[in-house]
Length: 225
Image (cartoon, rainbow, N blue to C red; front, side):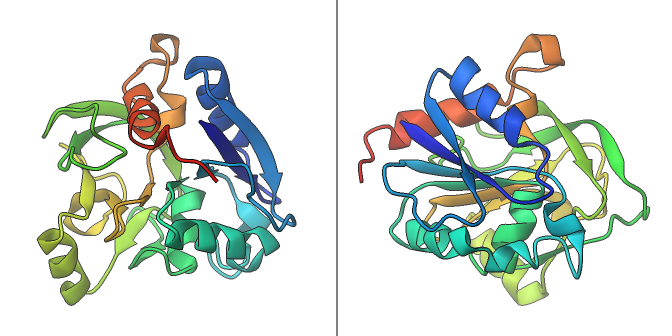
């Protein structure tokens, strides 16, 4: 499976993502710049964390208009796998691929720590290698990670089982309903604030994120252009 790691001006987790996929997972991965216009030859798209365009206006608001994003949107609309973590979550919500928005942490401080997540939906193509309600340990690093949506949207997310990860024990940012990650209705676009690519080796403090990427390969490994 060949992954595209999208790189915006200000991305700072692109190397982590490439390392996790190519060196640990053993799959093919390449950087794709924000000003490119094609995703031909790729089977999956990964949007990393960072501070794209300096987080001016709103996090992800400028990146949403980058050249490559029209291709990312097309890729997603075709039912192909797209994953965004942290800033990638912000970009993909700004692009309208997921509902809701990210706002400042309730504490108004940047939070960087390893937290506990509950896998509340293991029936997605991104979480099939986890057990239902399994508690995993994954790092976070964000200042604007509090997920918000209106009550109607929240009810729809719950009804469609689109809430995939929730914070367990501690909500580090004030996210509504403890939401840490959601998936679109089709099930092929998943976003989360925590960084699974930073939890793929025990040397890093946790390898719980590795099964996230293994799930993608297991379920999308036969995707072809």
